[in-house]
Length: 253
View 1 (tube, rainbow, N blue to C red):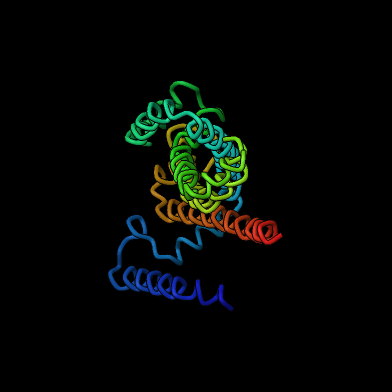
View 2 (view 1 turned 90 degrees about the horizontal axis):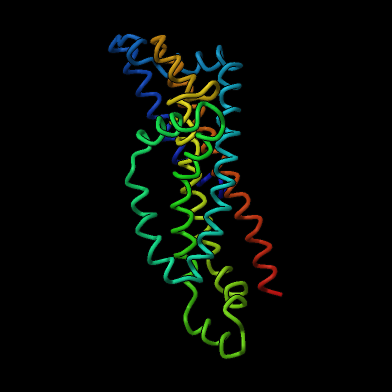
């Protein structure tokens, strides 16, 4: 019941938006080549469901691989930076600077350097999703109250023991916040990489539909990409809730 109450306003707004869109196209007589109605988009999605599904699976597999590697690398780097103030002061400006490079410029370069295979797409996903994870984890490590840390040190805890028993658990909320932010970028980054050059994926499908003046199929692929992103966010939220229950049981014990 609580979940329904949470999503109900969003459903109402979406229904109003798509209803207005459908009505505007019908009244204005806008060409479907320019602005197809939502019904045309859904029809195109149904007709092309096999092809779109095949390309969506390719996009999701690349995004999942790149995102998983990004989370792993981000955690390792965040731990290293946490224990080394010199590296932290040196690398954080470089990490911030890396985010100033637009993804539309990186995607064709990755394809130019590494070809049309899996590697350039995975690397682009890692580059795009890596920074939010590192920043979130670093903020989480810093959220541990200093008196708590000082008390553990006074009891003889080593720096690693403090990190493992107190600092790392305190970063849990920040970790999942960064995870959700990065997940929203993973699918988009993959599509950009495919758009620049690929054999399979929603990006290459969108490019093909655009070249054939099929705006309805372009929007169908965009809709699928949005659904994939929501699926990733839902999966992360489910993991957060499941691990949260276990985390509370451990703390209560």
